[in-house]
Structure formats: structure tokens, C-alpha cells
Image (cartoon, rainbow, N blue to C red; front, side, top):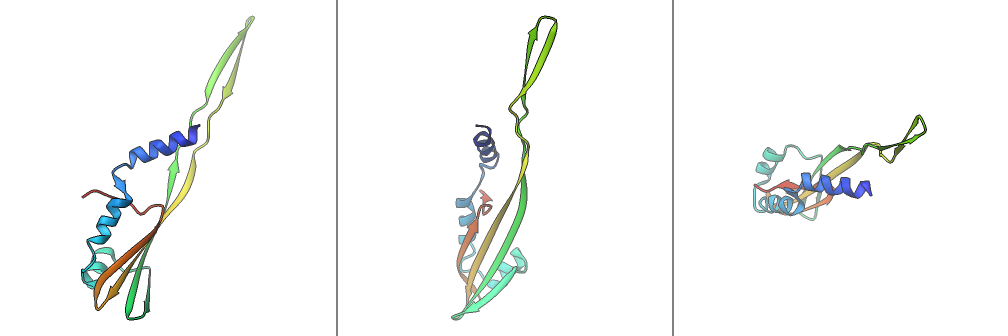
Length: 125
């Protein structure tokens, strides 16, 4: 019950960053010169050439901390003695997220792109 709530809370906090916005950002690069892409994005993590195209790949990885939930305490009084018990609660945890984006370049210009991962998001600009 608590993990879906945490996922919903995380989604709400990141509501402005979406994959649709990321795709708009990538589409804006189609037709741009390769040198401008490298100036803006930096050196790619890897490159590959095949069939007259060059593929520039950018990779990002990061860890995100998901906070736990505090337990609830119930106290029962029996005679003159109070008994307190802890119910529920979950520890925080860390998840790794990543995004791999590849641009295809022909004749010095970006002609296509693709992405994969769970962290390929951008805010609306």
C-alpha cells in the first residue's frame, strides 16, 4: 500500500518533467549541425559509424532516494501498565535510473534520434 503512494508522490513531484517533453527537445535537434549538438550536449559517451551514418550516444545514470514511511504506534493500557507496539513503517531505499540517447548524423547534420531508459524526461520550456 505504501509503495504505490510513494510512486504517486514521486510522479506528482516530477509531473512537469515528461518523456513527451524530452522527445520535443530531441526533435528540435533534427536538422542541426553535429558540431552544435556536441557544443550543447558535450562529448558523447560513445560513437559508432555504419552505412554512411554516425551515431552519437549520450548516457546518464543517477540514484534517487525514495523515503520510507514512519510506523504507527498503538498503546494499550492494561491495569496500570501501558504496552506500546509498532505497526508498519518501511525503510527508505535507493533506485538507480538511467537514460541513453542516440543521435544519428548524416553529412554533418542530425537526422534522427532514439532514447531508452527510465529517466529520459525534460521539463516544458
